[in-house]
Length: 100
Image (cartoon, rainbow, N blue to C red; front, side, top):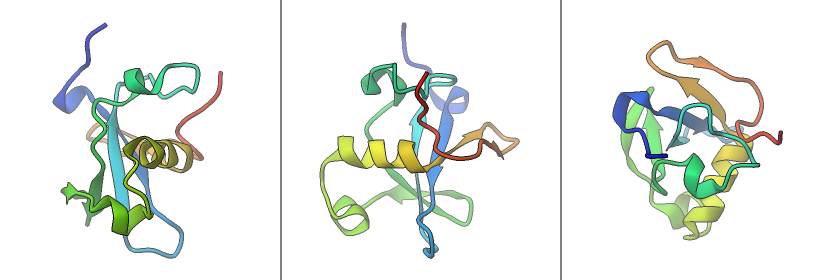
């Protein structure tokens, strides 16, 4: 199964408590599930920061998360973030990465 690109992607947004910063990764629609291999869930191991609701750029990983391990950062965003669906910006509640 091939990866979708662009507007078909969903965002998983993580906003640390007490912080004005936010981060997101792009994921395959309907694929955020711990039973699915991580490489099939995310579109790319690229972490973006959020600035006033839009994408600002790629995150300086060591400063933002205290590690350069992109896999660990993506897992943290999936565990603690919420899914934002398309242009409507309707978000799921709780951690995005579920177990089924």
